[in-house]
Length: 139
Image (cartoon, rainbow, N blue to C red):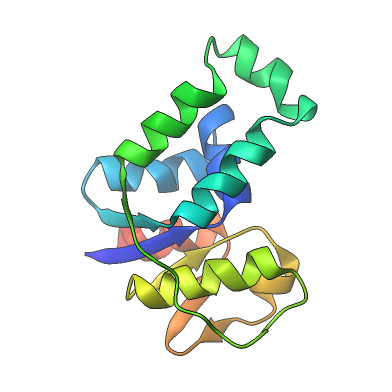
């Protein structure tokens, strides 16, 4: 079973929209993948979900930020990210990779162009949601 770290942008898309990111998230619930995270990524998720641009969609879904975070946390295993050298300019992106290393993840799933440009780090593939879904379906 593949171990995945979902970048915050993928988690938000999965929680408040239908589509490929939600299908990747569902792979954890369906026991096709093990979803890994960290306290730092959960904090980033809370901050990003609390921004006003998400408010309307969260309200339409009859959800709350706390409820969405709880639902996601329930599906994940949390690890302490490994410290890594600065790979990309955004420190949050480095936390994603450090989390993946600590989790012994197979994939980082992201829509972030800077992370996607890395392609692979220490054996961990960095892929967009559609590719992650294809890899999960292939077994």
